[in-house]
Image (tube, rainbow, N blue to C red; front, side, top):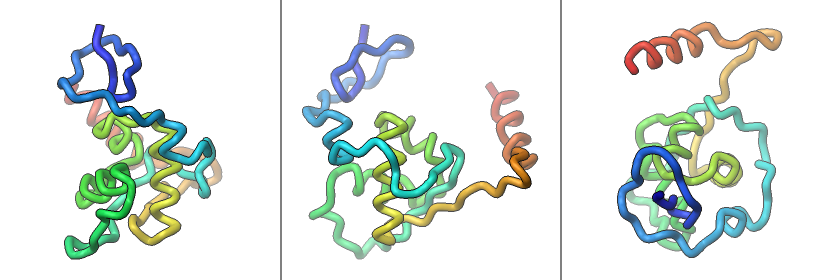
Length: 129
């Protein structure tokens, strides 16, 4: 059995050997579990920072998300690629958006109906599997 970067047991495919983070997920968010803004898991996130902006004084999660989101990514992708729990990623991205470090593009819901384009993209992705 492998462990995730948080030191928790993980079933499934082996995770590349990385040292387990000594920081628990709730400390990354200061104990907050609710993001400052509603943030859908399919919301797209792009880095609003330039390569010249110094993020060295920011938490490592800020730097990782800013770097990863130089290409537009969904909140779910950020969580999966950085192996950070979704709830933590949502809180951190919302904080970064409030500071102007990332731009969040929320999906538009038409009277509660799902976006057809999003569903087509999901279906296309599933077919590629």
